[in-house]
Amino acid sequence: MSDNEKIVEISMHCRGGQTCITASQLLAEMAFEEGFKDIIAIPIIGAERRGAPIQAFTKVSKSRKIKTYDSVVNPDYIFMFDISLLYIPRIKNSIKEGVTLIVNSPDPIDTSDLPNNIKIFLVDATGICIKRDFMHSSGAILNIPMLGAFGKVTGYYNLKTMEKVIKKEFGEKRLEKNMSVAKDAYESVREM
Image (cartoon, rainbow, N blue to C red; front, side):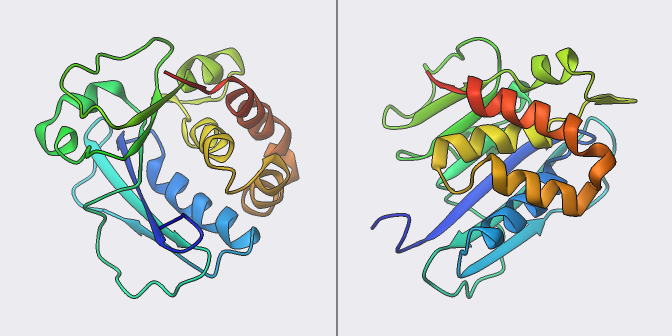
């Protein structure tokens, strides 16, 4: 079944402060702008604290109604905002054959314990944020570069759509800086 005919499930793993909950919501808005039939963003909000493992999920469908509102257990795509999260057993066990990983890393990752039939894309989101001074008090703001990489990998939306959603959400004043990191990630993401 192609991505056009099914509900695509996306799982995002980050640490508190790395903005994956916002990324999940922005991804839903971008899919809506691109005409997806149904979209849902599902944050997992508990006793969050900066640095603690956090998850967020997004489900998108180009042609079908989404009838389940639970978390994603068999993702088609996994965002890994922090590579150290890959070594948490419940996260590593969610990586099944056929999944596509989008990993925030400047260097290739160790795939010896991962299924063979997966795709891995790398983007140095942290490096992009440091270069562009896209930071807050606890570190890099990773949502926009990770979404830029995802847009390029999937073709679900382009930089024009990102610009429209970012302008609506964050205003004209923050548009240029957000788009500079989005474009850098969009242009630099590469398959491992």
